[in-house]
Amino acid sequence: MDHATPLIATIVGGLGLAFLFGALANRLRMSPIVGYLLAGVAVGPFTPGFVADQAIANELAEIGVILLMFGVGMHFSFRDLLAVRAIALPGALAQIGAATLMGALLGRWMGWSWEAGIIFGLALSVASTVVLLRALEGRGLVSSERGRIAVGWLIVEDIAMVLALVLLPALGDSIAPAQDGLAAAPLEARAVAVAIAVTLAKVAGFVAVMYIVGRRVIPRVLHAVAEERELFRLAVLAIALGVAFGAAKLFGVSFALGAFFAGVVLGESELSHRAAEETVPLREAFAVLFFVAVGMLFNPFVVLEEPLALLATLFIVLVGKSAAAFAIVLLFRHTAGVGMTIAASLSQVGEFSFILVGLGVAMGILPEQGRDLVLAAAMISIVLNPFAFALSARLQPMLEAPLARLPVGGHRVLVGYGRVGSRVAAALERSGTPFVVIENDAERVRELRERGTPLIEGNAASREILGAAHPEAATTLVIAIPNAFEAGRIVKKARQANPGLVIVARAHSDAEVRHLRELGADTVIMGERQIALEMIAEIERPAAAAIS
Picture 1 (cartoon, rainbow, N blue to C red):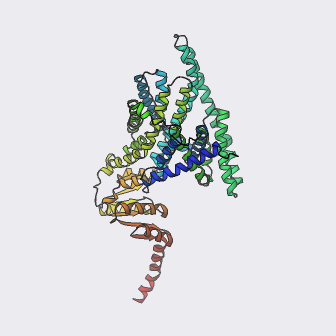
Picture 2: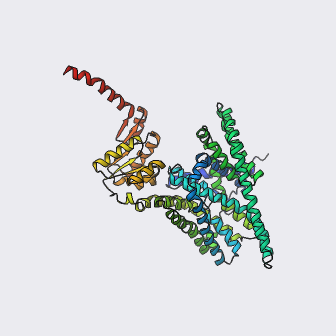
Picture 3: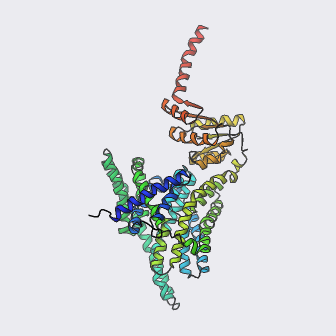
């Protein structure tokens, strides 16, 4: 009896090699995503040895996208989307237009039709939400202002791609008649108008159902099984996958968009944090399979067969659309730091691109060469994306005026601007000591900018964010955040960067004090102990006065 079924072989081969290559990439101080993509190349059809089932890999990857978009929705409420609509909506549409034009012109240079060039440009214009969320989570930027703008920007892109995927069949049907003369032009216009109306109606219907029915049903279901952890976890997964599947079948909405809105609805419940935690293991595993599936599509020989076309395609992805996005952000009067984050977020190619070029090739509009170039650009740009974020973090101090005036060397670094950190910052200001604050809360960031305080927005646990504060040249690091686990990561990275740095942290228990000191903190102040000492001092003061 043969037990080597395609499904099991694909999962075992994909996850096994992803672990090996991911561990190697991590050892080389590269993103594990690089290893996952290389694992896909290793089990793909273009390399010798074992070849995984491409169809099964794609379906497993689709589950990963669903779970990830569900998680994004739980962290990004509809109110947040409306809060950034002033820049996310026009910014994303303008950037899509610029990238599409660049792609269309490149397509014409390669001898393609305008229709093929437009599909090619659209595929290059969008970025991967999977890659973006991984990058933002790793740098603690998901809840920051720039993180919300970046996610909102990509959500607008996803909605635009859903519309494009619905319109493409109608446009494809009108292309052939239009080649015989001008008579077909009115039919094409009517087909486009009808397709747009139908698509908007379907999306509006789905959103209405989710907000009218989903807001009542989903929280009640989760509350009913909240006491049973196993059933609760199963309910969350069933809701994420079920809503995504139902949205696709009943409303013609993509799996990803359906899962996103399901997450938005659940995010308004008090159980959202628990639901997010319960889905992390499966979300991580299927996200890995997504990257493996992308790697399987990559044909390494395109690098040798089409070097100039590939370089031009990469230029559009890495430079062209990122520069356009950076300029758009500045036009909307946001800071250069926000612009750099958006530019880094967009310097890669997304999962919708693979669907779009696949449909274009199947319809006979886009040549296979276009699909190979998009996949090659996706593979290479995803590998390079962590370096784009690292470069963004390094350039931020040079581009943001308050930090640019900070002398690098002899300064102090303050992590956190909450109740404790704000008092430390006030003392540093009074003493005239040069310092820089690292903070990722949007309201506190806004306050610091208004005050003109030297600032780096982000999570100090990220190597790039902490490195932007130049700990190697600083004299003191004050970690004022209450999370001891995150503080420990910061202490470890800072001590590696500067063995002579004086590190002061805070803790809430003796165990946390020991943990931080073992990692390299010089002084750890436990709040409860300080309160006790102050209370003892107050008690003993009257007695001492009476004796004297």
